[in-house]
Image (cartoon, one colour):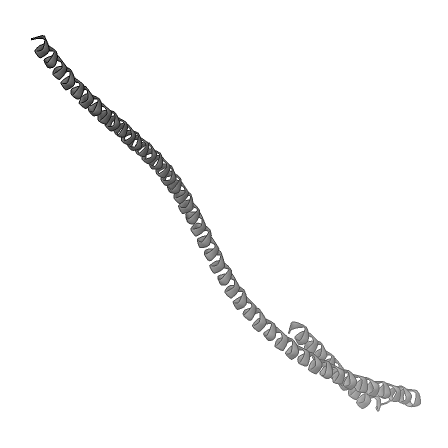
Length: 197
């Protein structure tokens, strides 16, 4: 009976040893699985952290890009306003140039007209000066004739006293003096016309 009990205990012990070995093997497998799971979990956690970090970096980059884009759009808007202002200034300058050219053309035409008018006046002056010179020559001749007649009259008066021959000579002298006065009036009129023009 003791042998049976001992055999039974040994069997039980062997069976327990097998179960313990199985349990240890399972434990080893479980530990390996836990370690693998832990490794995988850590890898997943690291991936999540990396992803989150990348996401943050992307978000920051996006925010920076949005900010830079906004600044770029503002700069573009300012440049467009500057371009518009410059285009308007160019248009104003072109209009001013056209107006200046038109004004210059008018002034050139006016200058040409004034030069032509001045030439006409100079010709008139030359003509009037020529006429005045001719009139002066005629007056000088008439005056010379009057002087000669006066001398003749004086000689006759001395010779004959106040005789009847003095009458026609006096009348002739008076006529010549009248002609001289008329010529002087003509000269004065010509000078007035010349000054008025």
